[in-house]
Image 1 (cartoon, rainbow, N blue to C red):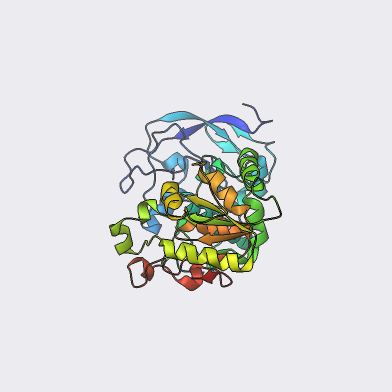
Image 2: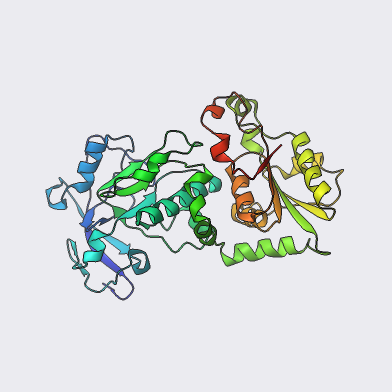
Length: 371
């Protein structure tokens, strides 16, 4: 046991054959109760929660005292608690079959995390909503150390603990602002399970969100050197994010995931050329060959080929202005850049199935320009 680093071994109960549960990724059923926290089974074979469980059954499982749970195994689990996340000292911890503390602060603290999924753009929306909601309700926010966000950003709020007395907050539609997140029951811990793709979830905490998306040094430095290499003569750098790939298929288009045509991209470029005579465009895309073929006649254009989501995002964030086509990745690149933003009004495709789930008023900030 090493209390100086907050690392110690405890015993955790493994849940066996509990009706209504099935193995799902990411969200582990808690094992040992500790105030508002519990130790997860991070050995790799634990039974995990089904997010479709009825809330009454779900809460009962999370609130059950560990001495009453039917189990056939006691297994050692190595857990790292982060004092800066829990906001308490590790002194006073003891490790046996239960974790015991006299810390009233820890027992009374409420925690909030995220349990949604998706790639980088999606998870950035979730993380931003988490930070703003936790701040508003005076909760402690954290994500797991292996969360996708932690691959590219310096996130201090990470922990391997799991929560008890927790409910999952959903949403009515992933691209429409849902004000139910404003009035969560503060007697519970919460895991935010939606996509929360609206600027309205966090616009009051813009400074907090920007400071939290702090790129890892190697990612930022590589992106900075690339962008700076094109700034000779005090040029105005305009980023262009071109999402194609899975959105360029006929089935995706029929559902509403419309890829922006080249006519939109050139029209948006002309918008900035008319305003900035020294404009230089940097193209970030999942289909660079398509971009080079369709934009080969344009001068003053560069193409990024890092093939790394973190570096691509950092490049967009360092541009003066950004052109957005489709998808959440470009959305966040434009938001982080903070300059003028032009977006594709054809996403989602008007009248499509996807269009019913996204409100343009909620999804696109009001000062962005739709073309």
